[in-house]
Image (cartoon, rainbow, N blue to C red; front, side, top):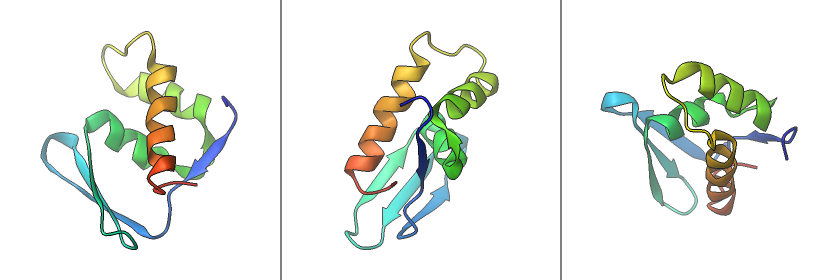
Length: 88
């Protein structure tokens, strides 16, 4: 799992909101998804080239007091995105 790579679904558009949050719209389903600032930062890193470990390292460098279970937070979030057909 640490070396797996995910990419954004090209049928999903996103927009940044105030305070670092973001919203995603799946063009096929019409479903909206709100992202908190950490979720939005993860979304920005999903380029199809970075591994889960690289994403965790970059998020850890971006936030002042990262949680001890950041790897689990990121992998759980990616699983939710995958379940919603937002990433592959």
